[in-house]
Image (cartoon, rainbow, N blue to C red; front, side, top):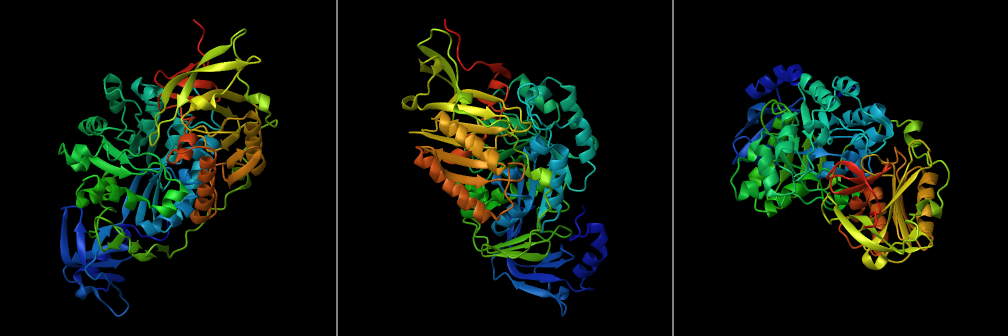
Length: 602
């Protein structure tokens, strides 16, 4: 499915030249604004922008020679004219929205370009699911580029996904019109150990002249890190401290600093620029994962830029990291990321560079939002029936499916417990002494230890793996279940009561996927996500309202963590240390091997 709303530069070059020279009239002129030039890092007052065919033809102090009888005029009134914002790394599915509804949500925030990795749907529907996301992305009035997912499964041998991605899939996708590169290479041990499959995917991408995304989720900056860089990934967003950012940039990677709904990694890394004085060209801002509530209530890339400025970053440098740096990284510097001739006419009008109110958004030469209201249609893909029937649980779950048996004769056991860390993706490997009753290991709410289960949902096998988790602070009788379970996207169930855990799991099987919270045997929140068990095609405002009710339900059950749902949904992500759960059992991600839920008695 080709983009039809924007001509290439070659197709409209004669007109751009003629408009710039005054021989033809522009379609649109923005007059008397302060031009924020991200190439030279300066602000130039009293400038005009002339636009034709959705691209910029002229930027200068006077565009009156480009005006004709049909030319639309926008008065900037001395406001700042900044390039449309780019999100360099993100997963649309994390918003629980389709590409169309995600675009509708972020357009009023000034996001005009997104570089998306749909590896969530790849785990559920394979290459066909990626194509659906890609096709809907190309239908949008803004620039939505797709990275071909690289790792499904994310860690071979440690989890079972609905589908697997092969090097042949990657090579095929590199020919699609909207594919910009390879999605984050999460199997970092595989790359560091020269795994032929991983290197074949990277080679297929580089042979196509496209960018390889990185994901090095380890604090080890020794030989393993250097081996990973040698394997070809060109960027990384998993850094959490200044040393991580510096190491990546020194090795020629782009350091992507993220501020998502639950990942707060900008403040701890931006000191590489603000204090150490490193060249900011090596740094990029991104969100990675934003749920719908963040998009509706707080913003998108405008929120990230504001945050970077609040952390002490020069506003012009912060803007560079969300515009031209991103475009350059993906080989698109001549096409977007700045307000200069030939580029796509993606422009934001704002009265202040620090607080960044997004007053008017122009994308491809057309006004798409004003004062927080989206003014354009965002077309929907016709999602087929099989994409809406992906939750296959097999037999109904019973409370006994969540039993964890103790060794014969044991009165207490020592358990390996997944420890949730607020506002960060990594977990901690904790230990807890738990009581045994009637041969079964008991949870301990007083120690903040409840149960977690991964319920198989792709093939109807009826299997459940069980372990323990700490950090949510749940009290009383409750359970929460989600078919959003990065990255395998089986079903994660966390609870203090096995009966409620069974009720929650079966409820999601009934509605075809989503998130539900049960308390004392009653459902108190539900978000239906019928597309791949990951997304709703309802507007972001409606999904955000249900998400807010879900988070309120978590709080009612005792959880006080910031954006705890994001922590919940990543507990099966077996490529981020330290402990995770998969359909195969408990995974020690520091060693990339399976471990036991209960420690052997000494």
